[in-house]
Amino acid sequence: IHKNESAMVPILQQDLPATHVTLWSDTDTTPLRAIWLENKSKLTLDSGSFSIFENGEFAGEGLLDPIHPGEKRLLSYAVDQAVKVHRGAVNDTQTLRHIAISKGILVETTSEVTENTYSVTNAADETRAVVVEHARQSGAELDSDVKPEETTATSYRFRVAVEPHQSVDLH
Image (cartoon, rainbow, N blue to C red; front, side, top):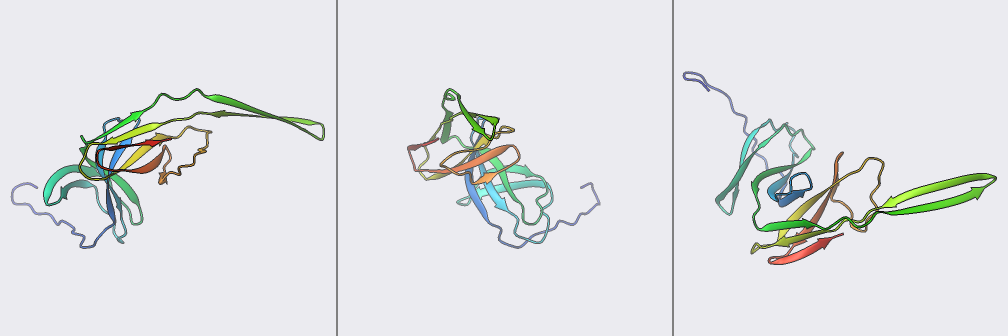
């Protein structure tokens, strides 16, 4: 705002559901502190900057794009130095073939199965909820005992709780 100018700033006075998590992705392998924010208000949250305070202390800041009513968004605000995620080597892809003959028609079905393992380590003194983003592949479907917390156009988001000074494997 320039000298002798003014602006109106909208203020939303409503509690919005937000969960502190650590976000890890194949595309950016640095674990990030983030909040999972759901806009349960009837207003659009405009783009701009935000600051996060944890236990009364400044924890970080970030930028957000507009969040429309009903939308849920992951907003990162700082690097999480207490969490390490290691993606194990992708196990060999197995090719499965199924051949069936019915009423004189031969049908061959081919499937490829790939297994991935992530090891999440928490060096913090408190439990961390860690969201691991696993990239989606076009034409592939997920067949896992562990179900994603959320599915986006580009990734599956799996959420695991990691106790202090412990490790958890996600398969």
